[in-house]
Image (cartoon, rainbow, N blue to C red; front, side):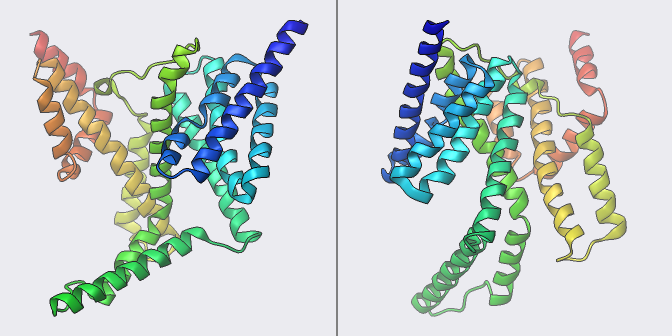
Amino acid sequence: MPNNQTKRLAHGAMMIALFTILIAIAIYVPVLNLIAMLFAPLPLAWYSAKYDRSSSVLVAVLGCIIPFFFGGLLALPFSLIFAAIGVVMGDALRLKRSKVFLLMSTGVTILIIFAIEYLISIKMLETDFIKRFMEFMRENYSQAMTLSESLNGKQSAITAEKMNVMFETMETVIPASITLGVFLFAFIIITINLPLLKRFGVNVPKFSAFKDMRLPRAVLWYYLIVLSINLFLSPEPGTALFVICLNFSIVLWILLTLQGISFVHFCLDAYGSPSFLKVLITIMAIPLYSYFVLIGIVDLGFDIRSFVKGKIQK
């Protein structure tokens, strides 16, 4: 028992030190900071996968406190997010959860921490960094348009009114953009760190093949509800209902597009088509996303994969 306790303390101290170094690199070292951010959750994920939840939370708290002494308030948001990611990832691996659960729990954790930090920045620091970022983009775009007009001697095709509409639309879809960005970031972190955790002796789950991806059928019902609201209620731009429907629509469009691409990959694989066709179809899905949304709806609503299998077997 004393040996196990000593081993746990030594491992925890080592992981805290490694986590602190990665956070310091992420804050102070250009170029390498991006790499450090991707690997920052690894030490705590490794520790959490080996030891119980209370010990992991304690190590994560210490991992957030120590960077605060050399990085100040700037280090706290970084360390808090990556510490939470590490604990959630490791805990899911310790409990032998699926990779889909791992992705969802990691993404939701990042969203919750981000929302808390955003509210703190508004209420306590009186700084809305999202609003400032949008103002910065608007100013830069206006300056670029002015410079282009002065160099070319021609008026830009994008008028001030069109530019305002464009930025208002961007501001409206910020929730969907953040959500999609967060889950993409979570997917990248999981994809990079799981092979390393496997090398360290942690049992890691695997995603099923993309061609076998099946979203919950509830996604189809959500899409039909949002579509019905848009068709029959026609929310006015700027209202809360319009913002909610638009953001839900964007997320659902992307999910159904992925489902449509998955079905096409399934058909190509079933017929033994060459791999370059899958790459070509995936690229074509970007401009033809509306067709792939329709394919995704049909794939979720009907069991057409069994029909394809039956045709091939005949």
